[in-house]
Length: 361
Image 1: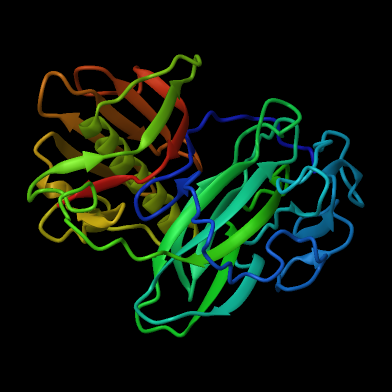
Image 2: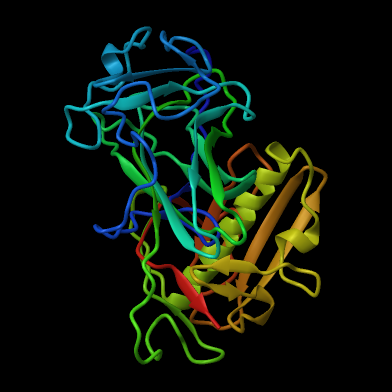
């Protein structure tokens, strides 16, 4: 389980549009429809395609209080407690070599035409991982979000991280919720999950609708709190338009990755970039059409199964982004203040998103 030592820097995406919204606060009064989401009831209340017991091989899990003491644990696994209390139970997982196997799954009853939020906490258990878990959330067979775990374990500079995703039930009366690991490496790819919840979203209070949830026609706003650093650890501050561009570029990166490895096909240009045939992107609560973004011009170049993407600023005071998907499973993302970015500019390292994302009308 410890054969691969090549490490590829990556952007730790904690939240974007259709995908992950990290650290979103949950309403205290909302009812959690998930049974045993904190695993305090032990190995019950959910289904899984992983094997229970010894966790020394891929596709296995255990329910315990400390990854380092799980049966079959490796010597570099986290000596740390769960997310709930630090002394309770969690699901400790050695990722499988197939993305078709559900790590965790549960079917719950839902009310049609209702918004819900699925949330869970995750942590890397290897002290330093060369192959990070990449979990997708799937509801009724459709992927609604992706999340990359922090590189280090909580006892070695890492942390438990929250990932949260919105979903509307439409005509459905049930939600078949599954967590799957899209990383199929047999080495490293070890993690823990805890405090899983699925809650209805409270309806907004009645009253004037001139606030952030109803921006003026043509406006572009964000109340997201974004912490962004480059590969040297230097913080990068973005203005609202740059935040929208960054989130769109990450959505492109996730879709290309998802098409290549989860859907087993290469995405079309229309699926990846703005244009007449683009499906558009839902970012936050409202639809974002990148073809109407006056601040950036988006391009994607496909080269077989390799690709690059750019967000080129149309104004001199905006920074540009470049996504390089040619070199491996996880794309590298670059930023340049005040102009188009290339692979020679600042490589982004850690991105964290807190709160409501973008509202575009």
